[in-house]
Image 1: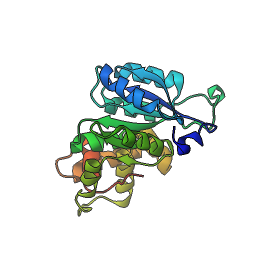
Image 2 (image 1 turned 45 degrees about the vertical axis):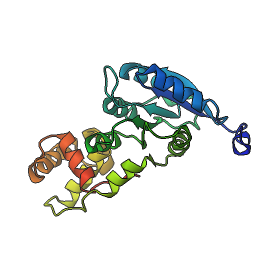
Image 3 (image 1 turned 60 degrees about the vertical axis):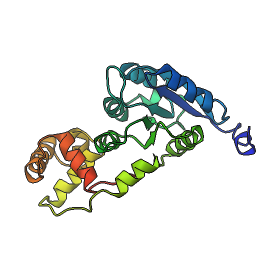
Length: 232
């Protein structure tokens, strides 16, 4: 144990759930994490549905999430967790974040994966060829609400196109940015203090005005690729 880690033993540990369908991957990561005094692995999931159940039951600080698992894919899991609610009276530890922060650990760095996972609420995105030490640092970063990115992911985000010319109104841009952050229509309406029907009208106008955009996922991908939204 390092001096830095020893100083953290009296502090609250970061509670982790591992979600990956490969036993060898989970076992290797768990072994690496358990060497650090400030991190505690409290559960494992082998598919998307199990990940949702364990997160709801154990309420971790961080979910380390693979993209491709049986059943629900990583994007669906992230979206559902981002919108999870819990009765305040049922929360025994109010210092823990809720919903938990999501750190993606994937072998893929394609734009459609990266953009969709951040849109679904992921806080960080690391590749599986990262060292165990980098994964530990990433967990600590997202536990504090900070982004954690592998270098190829950073490069992908930095080389996005400059914000393009478009005919979207300021209100439509506000709606699109919230869509790209994973907000539902109801949540957008609440955030902007407008009717849900008005939000739906703005969404339809966005589809009409953007090139080759016919669905919500295509609009979100366009927003990320064209720097309409940034990582917080």
